[in-house]
Figure 1: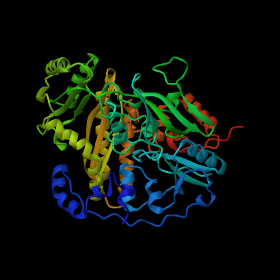
Figure 2: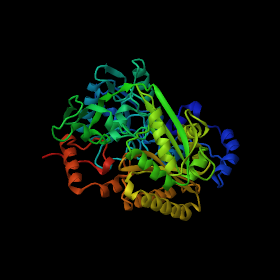
Figure 3: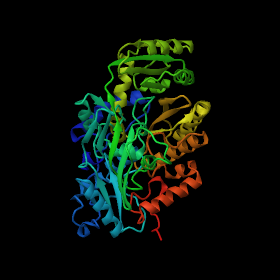
Figure 4: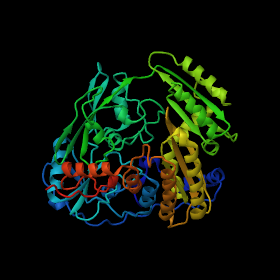
Length: 529
């Protein structure tokens, strides 16, 4: 059978057995409101095409993997589409080999060799992309493609306790980063849902966001300096708290998704661990009312660490609240001062909008249920896939003035697509991040599928939702990145002169066009004259 290591979210011990899935099916059907299928075992690992590069590899490129399982694992990310293909054994594109550089010199040698040999190079961190960011679909014109796995380029290299910053290797995973910082009494305070698997370099390359809802939400807020190697040379910005010296070199790399080079090190701003915490769960009559209350909260200068507003359906599905109301999971934290005053002010403001407090002061049932569902979601999704359910998410951000119209439009268009494509299903929404001028709605789709048609159904629903997002004035992604899946919609969002400038920059930094061609809509750049 196809190895769980290839397509699963966790470790092999986390994989559900067919007996587990069969036993869970009745309860899941009752919870979701539609029929599931008998669990289907993962397909056998297919024989992959012979690799085209191992016989040509030069010395000094690091360890090399050419086994089928290794190549297959580096050929997909962790989107719904990726899980379906991995579980079905459908590996349409895989790297010819996987390179494991142990130091920056081997990264530099790998890019030099790829440029000389016309081999595409796809950087790989934790493999958690949900937008096709690590899929080696690179177009024609290459003599091969390698995955550049940075897992050996890991560790916290230096801590500056005076400036509260840490120098971190790009391949460092979230738990390892926090463990190293914790020994110094510090934290990066950055916890994306993929925290256990994703890497610091991946966070920077994709402009990731953590689960804290306000203040320091994006990795952009934590980056002090970035070091990367490009085919044209080294790129390292000066460590500074701020600078007005022209366009920021860090901003060019944030969100570049490996298209301009390979991030190898990052200086991150860190902080002491919070000493004071407070949390509460409120019930709101509906999502719109809750959103107005949240807007006033942040515009009043209150910046809760957690501010997740779930619509009534999502609140019920996750077990946060089953009264038919929207649920607001709220939390404050502080390093040196107590949070009592902020919590009291927030409670008073929310009360003026008719929100009622269900529990406060510590993590009660509703908040605990939601957090557990949030952490369990990637594991549950792969189980639902094996039982014949489409389980996918997409997200955006929009100014408050357009919030209600965008959410209504996306929900309506997605529901129509579900009825047309799947014969039914559910789409829910919640707020994940809030700002004084807008918010980030996050949508979840759950629906029945037809065997063998899952990818076509996914594509039609994804297209309908994406079109509705752009029509509503939102961004095609708030924190999932662009990758290959969002490239066409991203092209419609960005200004044309900027697109031309980005392509020109790729031509200078990556003259042979070998760095992750296809992400951000950037194909192979023409060689510089």
